[in-house]
Image 1 (tube, one colour):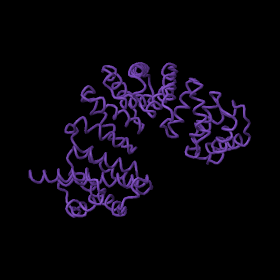
Image 2 (cartoon, one colour; image 1 turned 90 degrees about the vertical axis):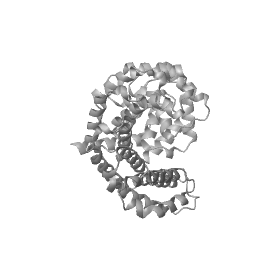
Image 3 (spheres, one colour; image 1 turned 45 degrees about the vertical axis):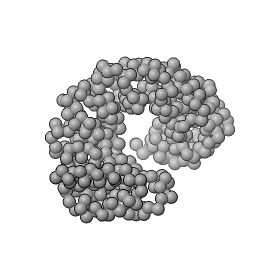
Image 4 (tube, helix red, strand yellow; image 1 turned 90 degrees about the horizontal axis):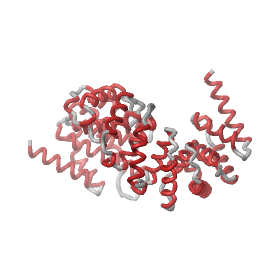
Length: 407
């Protein structure tokens, strides 16, 4: 038995650390019959490790990072599908700790697949694991196991309502003091992600967080907690004040551009003006030169500063120049609407950029615009100095269509 455990541990180590994907494929081919056709718990760790490795490779290939490697992608895809079936079939044989690692690997895979058919397969596997997890004695799960399981279902955005309910009960029964702040942030994020926000759980977590020394919280944890409470209803003013003080004391340079965008977005979502924080973020971002922000991050910054009426001229000038000199097609249509609204609201929209953004919006499918984007367009049309009869007509037509569809 001991020899078998050592062998499996060595195999899993090789799978995770082998740099040549062809070697991993050959290892899978050599073990395929034994790991796909048995429910021995010693083989389950190998199944999970191989599935996770192949899934990550598929995602890299889709992004174009693996296209120069001489690897047969079809073999990788076939192996991934076979392993997913094996994991789903054997889940009743998993040890408790193996369940958490398996659902996290499957959730990561669902986050990467593109087709509706693949999404459905992975969702069905997640729901099968949901049934299995709920059949277990939760007292056998560690706090870390519970946090990972919740994180997995949040990451996959699979709304396993009964699972979230029973795990919430288990968390409260154990006491939040027993969970690390990293685990708590995972729990908060996941319940928010799947829109299973519990007033009692969030109030209990807020009380627990405020009893701890926030200086020990990582930047990632601070940002995740802020976002979760920004999305949740309820009063979290004391937490936002405490975190703002810590962020300013720690120094904005400790946070990435993306994290700073998420911070101001969270404060804007709660309608917190916080001029010292916003001004500090603005000039910290500008001091970094060319910002490492994607289209979504740039839009988050523009919208957040406009919504809270923190109109920092240098920042909005930078955002306008970058939008003017970049390919606006990389933005989603509703992001362009938010950018147009933010620059209009702040009074920093130049006529040439107005035409550029307007023309891109007009090429979009208005039927797929969220209601919030249409309302922003109405606000732009009412306050902008630039006339846009074509945009006004398209916006009005879509609003009429939606109104008639509801009646």
